[in-house]
Length: 471
Image (cartoon, rainbow, N blue to C red; front, top):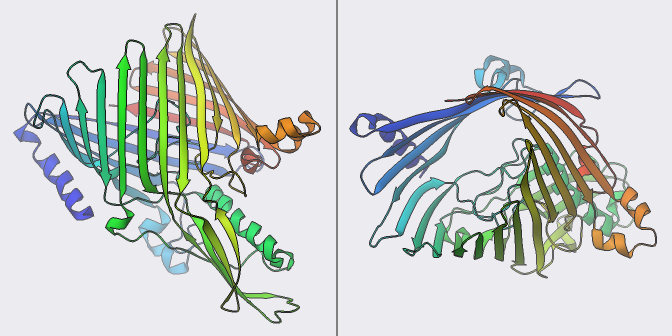
């Protein structure tokens, strides 16, 4: 299938003279430096080259190539700056370049009747109305290759059938993806998944052994390329003046892995003094989602809300093997349903000011009402001021994170709970756009917290600068 998509992209580019093709793209150089030790947290160049053309009155073709240059050596085995000696002779290790097919699809409009459109190929299918955290946006896997690009998604191979009634009041979408792709993770996300292993070891008591912190063999049991691992989805949308409402259903494999098994051997099962052969395995499970979203344009502001009810397919368990024998199980994700939701608004306040506020229960990688991955609460605020005909923009970003608001109100001391189980991110940035095609941006981001998701970032205070060019 990948070869067919690559062939399609080549034929599309070579077929440019047959029909008119619009060529565009972006180019970005991005650098982030840790304030604590001067390490480059992110120092890369990436971009996208897009081709789009109207093949006929009803047929639209689109493709995009992506590239990413890592400005540092990356070892093929270690995925870090630790290289084997022989890798110093390999260009793709010393100066790694990542090239991918970002998307490639056809859209045929008015297929059998007016308003019936079919899109087939590798595509990004956004669902939901929120613009920061979208609990119903589940049709494409998360891409955490950039740990600061919250909500970034990768395109998926899919067939999308859309029917819109002539009055545009009602529409229905049906989606089929032959494979539920896993998310692309970064080091911080992998550490979050590994936290599940620590909780399981705590149940068995083996977390108290002195040598359990390192030396683990890690494997990921990714989904087989089989029809049983397909994704199915449907969405009904209603639109009236100033109000859009939709309901959706999704059956998919959750794109964030859980710890399926932990195994090790000990010298004495009754009184162990050391762990050997330490290994654990990631895996994926099926879940079902029913969601609602709404956007209401009040003129001076737009209200947005989304809610998603999740049903894991049974209890998802982690099994611990001691000397090759199963000794304990722990619930990684309970079969009990749970709800993610977000509410917020954005508004042009006048005089160049723009405000976006969003409250969210449950981050992208969180699930369930219990355990180390249980849903947490977030408040995101973004305030912008544009001056000089929008050529200069100042931005303030704040993110507050509380481990659980319900627990906070139930605690004997609300403010003590917030301090002990909460965190924040504060950011300031300046953007200068000398033209519509060029953007220069710089800023600072600060993190702090305890016993919450954002606390994992508290050692990553940083300054950043980027250059972006659109063509």
